[in-house]
Image (cartoon, rainbow, N blue to C red; front, top):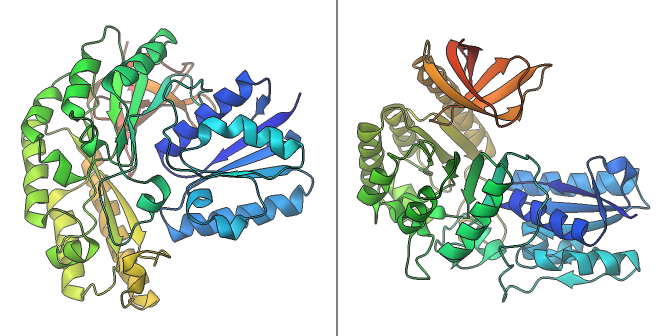
Length: 424
């Protein structure tokens, strides 16, 4: 039996695509394995959101070809879609062609290199899948986005917004619950604009999902703030449900309105701040994650300080800090770039400030008692990672299993997680 190893970079949507490709290949009688050494075919599902991740892919591709020159390598995902000319000798599977992975593999095994990059079709949502984590289901609710950020290649990789119907998503949801899944992640390039193309929105979807029977938790993926503002009040009312994690990922990108305008972000700093304050007023324990780009072309010292002050004021729980890299084929790549040493210096300052904020935010959970859902194995023996209602990672030690619910007390906090003990 032909053995296939899949390696995935990037966001939860990429992981969902990999799980569906694995499901199709398993259905076609291929064997999916977790170790590259024994594989006949290696599929690299790639990410192009940052230069760093793209460079990492090319290093990894070179490494695999040097270590395993006789293995067949197939490139899938965003890099295959946006830069096929750089990897033209490899079989390629674009972001909207994952449902054709079996054909690509079979042709590659017969020494035929085919490249499926058409973007005019939508992969079916009801594809079989092999879950990486048996208690977590990742459901893509849409593909593509409505934005046109000057720094981003996601649009080129994923295209314009195309949403799956509420009925299709519900069907996948129900199948996951039958498999005893405990966490369901709703993923997309931007969950905030879900349904705008089919006359619905995220609120309508969530109403249908939380009405379904069973014990489960929904994690809502990244949403841009300008879309959330369109249905904020209804959305915040829905978050009262115990079936939704009190966790939101709202990219800020910059605390300067001038920089946001240059990025083509469709909200102001003032709108963003008010949105976060409204959320925290209603849900003080809400975990809010954000993204910040340091050193965007033209960013002044004063504008950088505006970002730092916004971060301090809003005290985020998670901040993904990106040093600006000019992405080929983007408008920002044509702008005058800042010196790399300036970007590096600013990034270090932002990182130091953020780590202090994370530590203080986590200290607020000291002595907290409540439920956590075990959804991940820790790095150490008998160590497990659970999530409380605010999706805070909480480490516990003991003889537990995935999907188990524990009542714990937080006895220690670190910069990045909580540490708990079981309560009898």
